[in-house]
Amino acid sequence: MLRPAIAVFLSLLSAFCFSSCKLVNSILHDEEVVAKVGNSMLYKSEVTRLIPQGISGDDSLRLAMQYINSWASDMVYLDVAEKQLSKEQKDVSKELEAYRRSLLKYRYEQLYVNERLDTAVTTDEIEEYFNAHQEDFRLARPIVKARSMKILAESPDYGQLKKLMASTEEGEWEEDMEGNTSADRLRDYSGRWIDAGTLAEELETDVQSILPLEAGSFVETAGSDGKRNVAYLLDVVPEGSIPPVEFCSQRIEDIILSARKHYLTSSLEQELLMDARDKGKFVIY
Image (tube, rainbow, N blue to C red; front, top):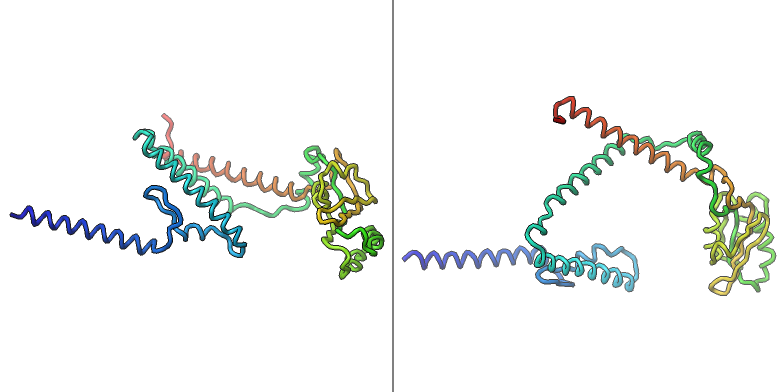
């Protein structure tokens, strides 16, 4: 006589659990579903969380669709793989454990390095490295010190502004160009070296079309908006030359810091192995 009652109780319990699960899911995901693949659903909050603030509506829509399509592709592949692969093929526990070990190792190395890395690189260290490795910095293309602007070719200030660009007087370029409305996109690279590729971008063209470059000369190209791109070359170091050390300083600093990081991680590995041996944790039979 108890069996029907037990069956009814189990049915009620199952229904309660099912409704509870639906309630919990509703609480967690009480929002709009934007895509579905099989039983997997993508919610609006997951998409909007990845959209940067302040971008246009068109850009927001484009990024959202990219993410939705990427998510759908992953889910479709997963659905097919779950059905087509054998139990052994779906067992990724070894790979996951290997990835976990690798990730934990990497994170600890980052923590160790960040706590001990000396990030100060002196001018003497940069010059010492440069002097010992000058051939590594030989130029594949010219570098320049230059000024550039964009201006209407028919502007009455065209000739005067070009003269100002060629000025060697301290501060004259900035003072006289300030407030002048005839030219726009003013760039002043007179105080630092830039690659010829950067100059070519300023001139809206490719590097080969502006070569050869000569100090004291102008380079002019037609702009995409009908204006003229004008650059004045104050100084040039030609292709194949050893550049000034200041042009290479950031690259050298990165090299030095990278070497320090490598030394720290290599030392850490040796220290951990030695410590494990000393404590009997690492034994080779």
